[in-house]
Image (cartoon, rainbow, N blue to C red):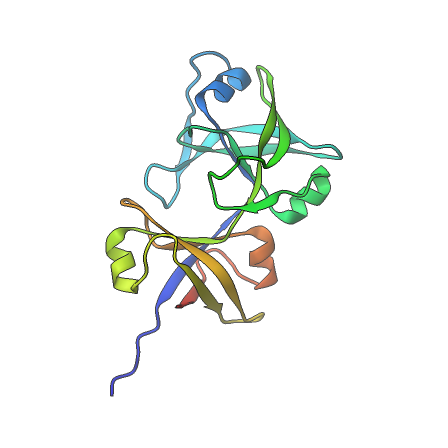
Length: 194
């Protein structure tokens, strides 16, 4: 019997960042403003913008927080739980784009300020895949899997959600707290466990 091939997934680490909608972009940077790409990210059409903002919570703030494009239908601010302690507002753990009823946050740009009533979240760990890759790995959209990490602080992440969409590239997205817990660096790999 042949040896079973391990299903390796590359890992990316997401630091705090902001996704803006058109209205909030214009309130922060001026009418008709367009984001400028600094570098392309691994997922289709996504880029780190040149522009940054200041985010302000009840107890603290972060300056120079990177905006990620393209624009979305609703503004979303992604932070780690540790970031939440500094801001004074612990975000709820959410699937990306699920911001209804989430925590408030204030964003300050060069031309204005936006006080969001909701939008601050800690994104659930997730794996991006396109349909062909999902078929290869034997998983489907919204399936919950685990990912085993080897190394100095070996661990297994449970409750990892699979997000399948054309144009996606297979990568696991962790926040900085999760990466630090596993002594994980950008480009490390984990083994998919179904």
